[in-house]
Length: 229
Image (cartoon, rainbow, N blue to C red; front, side, top):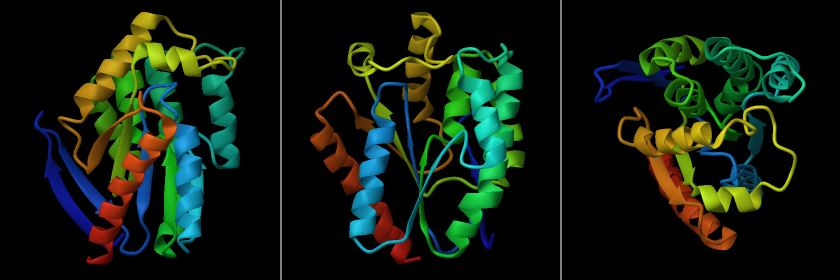
């Protein structure tokens, strides 16, 4: 990684951010039921139509190791794990994903779009799971070598809208009580105030076409900035 900067968050935490000089790294994140996967797939399709090389990944997963860890983390019949063990498995999957997929693609100038990244761990295992966010930041920095997305798109969704969209069978984390899901939602909303990298909140309660239009506007903006650096 050839470019680095040091960012201090409002909580006093220091995050040393490193970014490769070529590809663009985009993340869609937010509570379950926000439509991240659908919007990420649509964004990839649009960027490819624009003539870009695009790699779509999901976190956790995306590698043989990551897919095994994803099964342990999300399958409803998997063994139960405490929040700290969950956090470490997410970080292990993330580190492998970066080493095998993300970094080689970014160095080659490819645009990488990920469905979730470090912010999810800060919210699900931190805010909702009870782990000190500073601890997650420290482990996250080790797992990612400081890499952060050029832009994180936070899809904010109400409890009612999320419920209406989640018709499929829920995974282990999605099946947790509403009190946990409410803490997740609040964690995402508060994270935008203290996130040490570019982040934009999108109202995901709107119809999918409008949500995508907002996403594309933000992505076009960061692409223009990226092309000037």
